[in-house]
Image 1 (tube, rainbow, N blue to C red):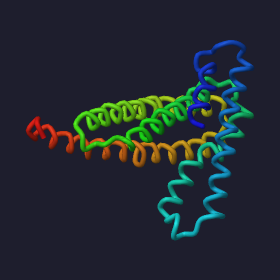
Image 2 (tube, one colour):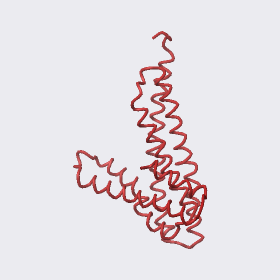
Image 3 (cartoon, rainbow, N blue to C red):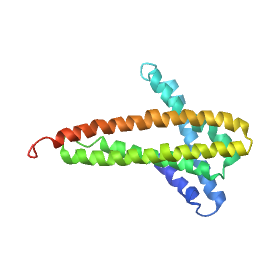
Length: 202
């Protein structure tokens, strides 16, 4: 899903072709994400018991889904042609696609072997750096740009509510995603250092 949505955002961020078409593709991505997130919340609440989904996990799900679910439709109606919106969609979907693919692939690597461990670390660093750029550096810039647009437009409802949800999702990006990815990297870098300290014939 993230890969397809990320690809659909490419014409919008590169401004390829008719603006009406590439803006519509970016809006399609938002609607697709909204549909997925709404059904995910319904599925989680309806099919799983509190024992199966702890409160903290449920809290993370709500944080993760809050941005698109609450701001998606109003933003499409008012700012469908805004480049900032297109970039935000691309960063979120593209970075998630890279991270999900690498995470899935690295799970099947036998990290007890030197070669596989090196491969694991290289790919994990790529995933972390992509996330760091998309969900920290560029994210902060895009959030600031959105707030500036809302302030200039005197869109006070967007400014208050939108900023709140952007800050909530920022917490998810920084404290949950990036922190956990860096912690995973540290763990396996330590393992790599221990491997390197062993004799080469082992």
